[in-house]
Image (cartoon, rainbow, N blue to C red; front, side, top):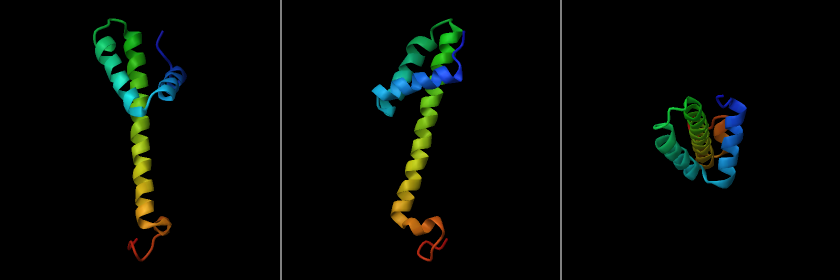
Length: 88
């Protein structure tokens, strides 16, 4: 039976509770390489790929949020509504 979304999210939560996002990505990359790429078990392949995708998607989301926070701290809260300083 294939992993469903809620199981994959719980798996991801446990991995991220015990590892940094970078270590979690590396761990899932290794799991894909050493297990997913060589097994004939489609269920385990799908499970690894699903959790790996969620961990990478979460990391990209955090990077986007970090960029926004950096922009606001650089330009000030006034940029949310536009200001003369930033010509927005």
